[in-house]
Amino acid sequence: MSLFSEFELGPTRLKNRIVMAPMTRSRAIGNMPNALMAEYYAQRASAGLILTEAIAVSPNGTGYPRIPGLWSNQQVEGWRLTTDAVHDAGGKIFAQIFHTGRIGHALNLPAGGEVLGPSAVTAAGEMYTDQEGMQPHPTPRAMTLDEVANAREEFAHAAKNAIAAGFDGVELHAANGYLLTQFLTPNTNQRDDAYGGSIEGRNRLTLETADAITAEIGADRLGVRLSPHGVFNDLVDYPETAEQYAQLAAELGKRNLAYTHLIETFGGSTVPPSTLDGVRSAFGGTVILNGAYDRNKADAAIAGERADLIAFGVPFIANPDLPRRLEQGAALAEARQEHFYAPGAEGYTDYPALG
Ligand SMILES: Cc1cc2nc3c(=O)[nH]c(=O)nc-3n(C[C@H](O)[C@H](O)[C@H](O)COP(=O)(O)O)c2cc1C
Image (cartoon, rainbow, N blue to C red; front, side, top):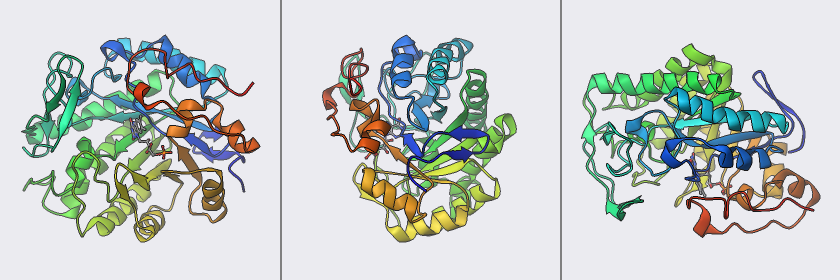
């Protein structure tokens, strides 16, 4: 088995085991997916599977400037440009959906949006806004039980919209410190109701959300991204992490989802192999691994059956034809960081493929 062999991901046939990791690129002016984004994704359609940048499920979940949404009919139509372009180029694409929770700012939210979280715990550090540059993180308002149920339904609605927009499936973003991770993690979840207080309580919203999405689109089109031990966005690691994620993975495994996608290293933390092993065996299904992979490391993970698929993030930014370069052992171009989140085509669609 190699990185370049085909893979059946539920009903979706992948031409290789190389996944483009989800990456926020902040080109969606007015939270609307557009033609420039369609061009960017189509350029990368030689990946076995593209995962989109994180897409907000609702105005409350749109904490960053210029990130796309998937709650309105107009946004569904906008995403059609991308799904058609990727499919025409022979690719497959899942929509990564998220809610930013406490990681947001009033200046970034569309009309009617509010910064909410599991508890009124403010993230350390600052948040970028287009209008006023860096601003302190606001204190989120703790969600009522009705608001928790509402967020779950926002995810289900966005997942349904994703399929209507032509996506092959959905990745539920339960990683990197956004709303679902804020519920999973004790420092951000200080609730004493059914959604906090214990491993079972903290896992509840992610599992209920997976179930609500499954009811709309089916389990075999849904994957879940997790970042155990992650500290990005002011999460604090805790002694129960391995146990909590093994339980979460076992519950997700019972649901026969398309995959679980584990971030091994990103934003200042690395997952110990023992936690990965625990999650992998508890889940029992398809596993995507991600974080600082190159060709050799990816081959070894697949040959050693530690992963079925490998996601590459930053390497895809400057190498739209990454699979071909990996196969040929060609040199990789370096991405220009100053364009990661800047609007416009520069540093986005202007990286050439090999001649
Ligand atoms: C510019 C940029 C934007 C990112 N945006 C997202 C995102 O929207 N959703 C997500 O789950 N991870 C996001 N990540 C994390 C990547 O998916 C990936 O986990 C990380 O880059 C490590 O993989 P790599 O070493 O192959 O780049 C982002 C990373 C970068 C560099």
